[in-house]
Amino acid sequence: MKKITTAIAFFALVITATGFTAVKEWFIRETSNYTIQFPEAPEHSNQSVPSEIGDLKMEIDIFDASKTKGDDNMVYGLVTSEYPDSLVNSDRKELLPSFFRNSTDGAVTNVKGKLLSEKEISIGGFPGYEIRIDYQEGLAVITMRSYLVHNKMYVLQVISETEKEKNRSADKFFNSFKLKS
Image 1: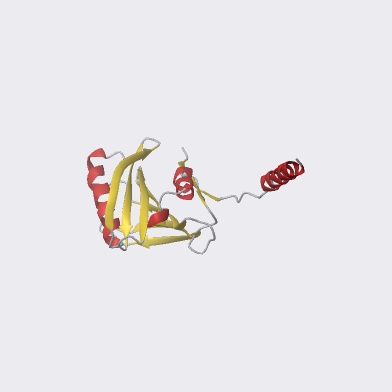
Image 2: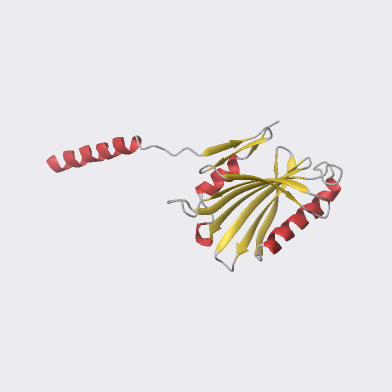
């Protein structure tokens, strides 16, 4: 009987002690247009990138999780691109299929990967696309969600080792992206 009482007391102590374990808060990146959460503060940069339709303003937030103990992902990223409103806009429905096709093909080509899957998605009534790319023949999977909101493209991406592709941290990152009205 004493062994059972000791075991119950030990179990209660473990439950109590773990109840006070600090839960690590994720970093919230907030702008006038959106909010998103990263496991830790990402590196932020602004760039101007030349393209066929002129220079594109880009904001880039990248968190390298490859050195973070216990994270199932290697990289979390958000890239925001602003296009000329007269050429690219979510209201121009007839252009969206070719816009997303070109974006998908460009992403796959840029990493010399293989397209694993693609599907249409949306956020707040705005069109989007989710793709999964095999990177370096099975080394990793790049999962990307792209949303076109008026003339701004938001590209969220997580890079994971192939066997760790489906994980809670990736889901939390993708699901934390919220547009502001």
